[in-house]
Image (cartoon, rainbow, N blue to C red):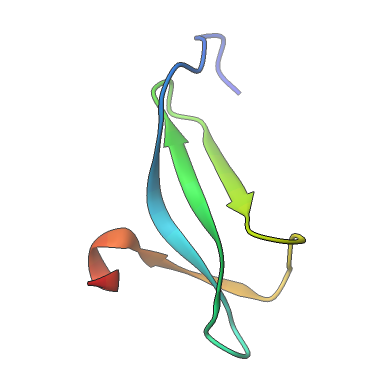
Length: 56
């Protein structure tokens, strides 16, 4: 974590279940460079990340 304050965050990746390919969350990048997952339900271990731009 950086000392700069988090002011704005932007989703940069979709978090998908490895087994079912269903969307389980989003990975956010904050203005200070921090990364943070935002889960739709409970956090999962078996996931893969897909850039938002590939989702279209």
